[in-house]
Image (cartoon, rainbow, N blue to C red; front, side, top):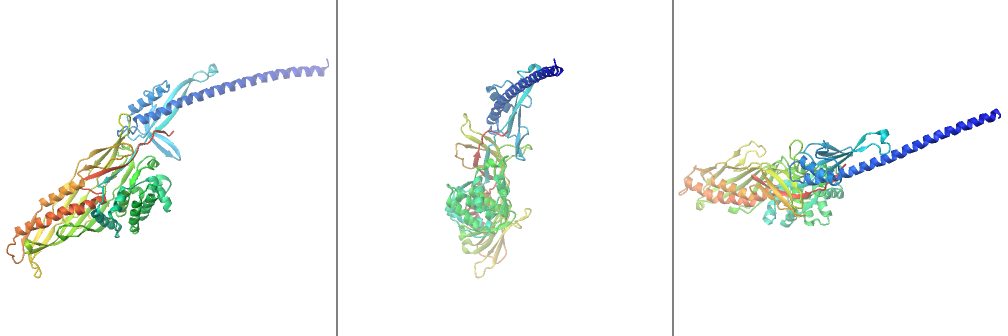
Length: 585
């Protein structure tokens, strides 16, 4: 055979061997890829099955033992048991109750647009993290090569954050014409301008509600820029009091079910508020939810929003309020001076305490000093003498604090939601006397003096009278108020401490009963007019009737208009969002 042919033959045999070896390698690689695909798919299916166990376990844990349990903090044992029961129903082979860190309590924060779970313990928890694990062989096909097992893990985080909205004060359940007259004086003092609304206008305002979403929409329609989108943007916005009232009025007008009377009333108040300064909306409405947008549908009373906003704009200032009232002795008007030390605040948020042991959601009444001056000239002792004096009543209402203790959501065994709000009334006082400086908390009260003189034209001095300063102090212990909510029907306000009408009635009666009237004759004696006669005449003719009338005609409606009280407070639950258990991771 020719050498060249023999060389080509050997080359072909070598090539056939190389091709066969390469084909074997390709076949083995193909089998390897098939094994890899099969195992990857199997592991993905196992991971998916495990995730389908973890997800409902987290949801059930929050649903059955979360913040809707009616306790101030979550019970890790109850949460773990609920998670394990759910996992077992879905075929979980492990035990979430005993596995280390399988069930954690914590909170969810958004960082750079990404939701992150942070373990916080039971007190401040709003979310549950469940970690389900399973041991599987590394490869069903190539087990001999890889060997051993692999631990798969599925993590689910569920959150349920019920919210409630409430405010603290003394409320006007209804408004009549006499109340409207007093309210015009109060709002006129807050606004620094006269205002004239009738009882129907105020009643419409008291009965109207607006949601936070409607407030955001109202701002957009009114062309008022917010600090950012959503509820947090609304809260961070600083606007004039007049612009805030414009937002409220626009929100009421834009709502198809809105109250036209309430919207018109807010517009009338807004027109007189142009001289007021800037407020932060978040100081009017305190939203403490981890996700503020969860409160978008929370309803807030329109009267409360307006009253709190005006008081906030006037915080620290001394206001003068001439108030019309029908009182004995022909008195038709009184002068009211007001100093708002701290404005009230409305609250929307979750129940329970934070990691520092502080209540998450709190609201309070305002803290204020109030003085009523009544100039009086009246004949005494059958007209033998005249008494001239300024009857001054000083009231100080300390802040009443309230907190959202718990929310127990409705269940099969308990058809109504149950909300518990705790409250601690502040110390309050009512006194006869005149503040030397109403702006100075340490200033003493000056006593009331009366000049007794003969009738005109002589008007000669007969006696001088000093009425000792007498103070009634009220203070009640903290207590819990329980509100039952069925369906969409919210319960009426409840009172902590002493109701305003009773507190004022008791205090004014006590003042009247304990008056110390000391008369001293200083001029020409008048037959039949002695010191004791003057003292008795002042008591029965002036102090007893005027004090009791001031209680009902002035003090009560003025303090209700401001949401203030003496040694007590009304708590109104105006919104409840039970929330849904939802996966956040």
